[in-house]
Image 1 (cartoon, rainbow, N blue to C red):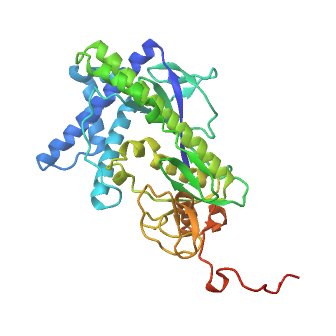
Image 2 (cartoon, rainbow, N blue to C red):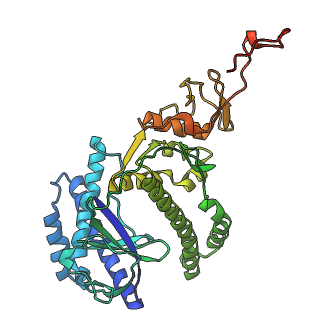
Image 3 (cartoon, rainbow, N blue to C red):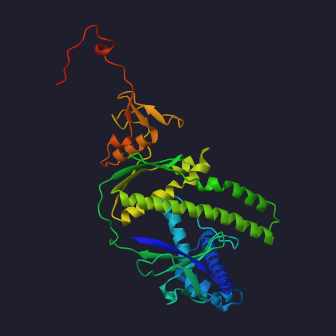
Length: 402
C-alpha cells in the first residue's frame, strides 16, 4: 500500500525565493506543453510525445534568451511537470471512456494560483541531512518539523505551498503487512449524520464538532475585510492570507478529528460497514453547508484505507438500501419518514426505534456483519392486550406458579 506523509517546512527568505522561482518555471513548462498539444490538435497534427516536448521546451529552450532562466532550477522538476500533464490528459480520456469519473480537460496554470507544488524524484538527488533538514537541489537545506518517522525510504518528495502561505513536504512511501492488528470480536455498522456525526450499531453516538460553523463568525469578519481592500494591493493580499488561514485552521481541525475517529473505529472493530451516501446530491440542498462541514467522503476514505492497512474488513453498502425505513427488530419496511422524525414505532412488532441507531444496525445487517438488533437500544411499545386478558376477572383464577 502507498501512503502519503506530510511534514511542515520552514524555509528561509532566500529559500522561499528559490521555491517561488521553481514554482514559476514548472508552471511555464506545463503551459508551454499544453499550448503545443492544443495547437497540434487544432491544426490536425499528431499528438506531440513527452520526449519531443522535453527536448523542445526544456533542453533547447534553455539556450534561448526568452527561456534561459529555466536553467536556474533543477531539470527534474521541469520533467515532472510534463509527466503531470500526461496524467491530466490520461485522466481526461479515461473519463470519456467510462474508466473513471469524468473530469475536465487540462487547463492552463495561473501565476495567481494560491496552491503551487514541485516534485523531486530520486534523480534529483534530494536527501535528508544528518541534522534532520531536507536538502533540495538548487534550493538548499530546508528546516522540517518531523512529527513521526517514515515507515520506509521514499523515492520522491513534493514541496507544496498552500493557500495560507504554508510550506509542506509530502512523501509517498510503500508499507507492507507488518502493521496488521490482532483480531477482535466486535463488528459495527455506521450511520453518518449531521446532528450526530457517527452513530454506531451498538448505540454509541458521537456528536458532530461543526468546525466550519464554529469558525463562521470569524470567517465572515475576515471576508468582509477582504472585500473592502483595493484589488491588486498589498493590503488585499494580507487580507486574503487571513481568510485562507482561517479556512485552513478549520480544515486542519476537521482532518484531525477524522483521523482520530477513523483510527479508533478501525482498532476497536474487526469489521466496519458504512453506507455509500450521495454527497454531491446532498451538497445541492439547503443542507449544503452542514454537509460540506461534516466531510463524510474524507472520513469514509480514511476508514477504507486504514481497514486495508491494519487487516480489518471494510464494507460499503449501496446508497439505495432502505436503512431508515426497515425495522431492525422484525424486518418490516415502514416507508420513508421526514427528517424531523427521530423516533418511530414499528407497526408490526411495536418496537420503539431510534432512527439513527436503527439505520446503523440495518447497515451492519446489509453488509452481512454479525450484528443483532440487541444493541440497537429498541424497547417494546405498548400493545393492546388480547381480548381474553382485557378487564378484571370476576372470579379468582388458579395460580400456575410453581
